[in-house]
Length: 349
Image 1 (tube, one colour):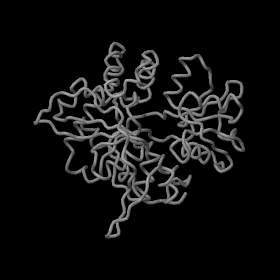
Image 2 (image 1 turned 180 degrees about the horizontal axis):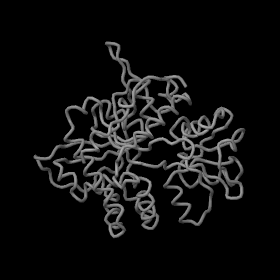
Image 3 (image 1 turned 135 degrees about the vertical axis):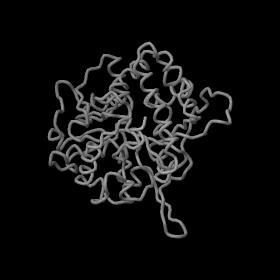
Image 4 (image 1 turned 180 degrees about the vertical axis):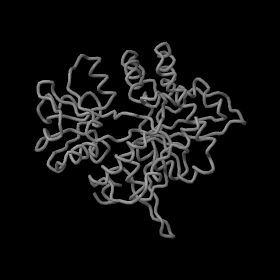
């Protein structure tokens, strides 16, 4: 995959400056309802922005809870969450110093760092397990990448994370990903209709839609992408230049975020969690039952075996980078792992 194709497929484009250097940009994010309840301005707090990968959804509840419960204030911070319009908006905003924190998966950040010179680095790992799976009918389960060779699989978006992960699953087993036909089936429960009509043999689903299927009593077979192509999921990143001079703010943000995750895992806090999310997106929590199920599903996705939320699994990052190189997702073959991710800050929490 060439540099231009990757940027186009990721929703990014490169801008070359007058002095010949280039940086990655994207359209400004659509913020949606960014008017969550904020405390009156406190001049002693540091104002920093966090751009989400996609709108304001339960996946980022740790931040909304940390705001509501005052965890960021305890760290001397006031965080403004901005709803992004895609991973590209989060990366471009941070790269251009229009936001301090962003969130994206390794399959997106690593190639941009290595092949396009994106000036970002991951500082904490949010998703410890992939939120994506290949869904198929229970009586025709897809349990191995070889089963979809020559068949059609639905992806959430063309050229996005799910297509890259699907290709990586094939490459990991020595299979040719070009022999799999991919069509866009989207990210909501409507994607099931493609399977029911026989237009696809399986489709990529994510945690939110799996939860919705469960609520409706719809049974499907799920094959998590980590089973064949383990890649660190959505993780917090900052601009590389901020690593040396902004350590205190980075550690403070991560400490507050970890407290947010710890708050999420307590069932007695469910109502407060939904209130925190609803301050930024009322629609996301309008179905209270479904929203609570999503919160409960989010916790095991983000909790590592150690129990320490946001821990960085460096071995997983190293194997993921190697797989991205083998599958052609990333061209670079020499950049060391410390250019992509660091555990320096999360280790200080």
